[in-house]
Amino acid sequence: MGQYAQGIRLNLGQFLQQLLQVFFVGLTIGMQRNVVPVLAEQEFGVPAGSFTLLMAFVVSFGFVKGAMNFVSGRVSEKAGRRKVLIWGWLVALPIPFIFLFAPSWNWIIAANILLGINQGFAWSMTVTSKLDIVRPDQRGVATGFNEFAGYGGVALAGLVTGYLASYFDPRGSLFVFGLAVILLALVSALLFSRDTLPWARAEAAAHRDGTHTGPLPRFPTNVSEHPSTREIFTLVSFRHRTFMALSQAGCVEKFVDALVWGFFPLYLHARGVSLINIGWVVGVYGFVWGGSQLWTGPLSDTFGRKWPIVIGMWTCAIGVLATLFVDGLTGWSITAAVTGVGMALLYPTLIAAIGDISHPNWRGSSLGVYRFWRDLGYGIGALALGLIADAYGALEAGFWFTAIAMAISGLWVAVAMDETLARINPRSTRTAPS
Image (cartoon, rainbow, N blue to C red; front, side, top):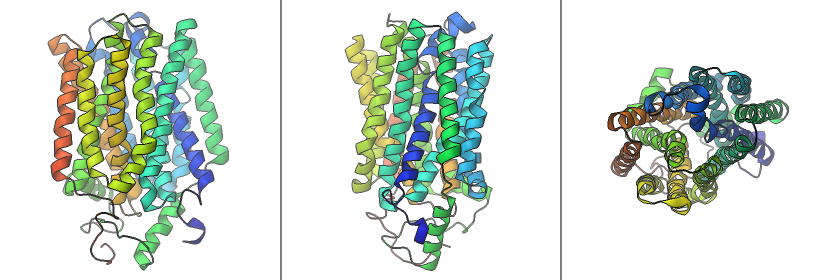
């Protein structure tokens, strides 16, 4: 593979640059995790108790981000990863101005459409770029570090904006913080990011020429070398049992994040918790989720992908439900931490598992399809949470719905998924996939 040899150490500079990029992406989404839901009524006129309208800004984000994940993955195999990353940051530039001048909640929904495009393009490319440049046995480490940096940024931004909004004008704080982050990210991408598509093409050539070393991955054999958009979408969505199990799990686990984004701040605020302390509780979830991926990613490289995903799904279910049965900042912080550990077990491992069985020729596309279904979970989950909470007249119904959905989804993975780590479950023949 020559100059496009894979490995974290060999490509450390670019690996670190992509970590910085995903940290900026996390800061961009995290700046509204704490402040925006609480300000919905007093600043933007959302009627008290209208949970479906409140969650509309998460719904818009989820559906747009899901679609853009798929688009960006497909486009990146033609245009390259770097261009798509930069396009994502250009789209984000109006967001801080909308927060500053928005006259109604509809404008916040519009801002989250732009945020969905930004996330679909920028975060997707940080993941894909890392999987391009690392060895197959480093995918868990790579995705763990990637999601640690991204969700560490989410947690940090929620905490910082909570403090800023408490001491300064909330809109002005979001504007200054958001604009600074987006400009820094764009400049950094323009100056220092490098396209990693040549690494993927070199890896594909090694598989084609029979020069690939190590255990042979279980690539699907019922797919062409360069599949069409329809072919790759149906393969990852439902034609392959393991891909389908991973895709549904990705979709359902986003119910948890939609709950934390939209309902956690309101649930805590209704119990007299201040914006700063809400930021700390939500921050515990994000920091534990982000930090724990530094060990859960390598864990999956050693022990496999399947059972960390299953255990993570069930751990999240326990953490979400336990939130309703504790009281006080300590109790809520503990349940937030439990939920964060569950997310850390499943989140990078799902991405690594998709990468394990995706041929380099179409890995960007398959990741895009998976991330389409995963982030569509924001929209589906937020819409379901809003409707269920409105129907029962209580936020608590959303917690029960999320916990039950996670438990069932984890059972699906346990029954339907084959282990994807080639070292543990290699393909028995060295014949190249058709």
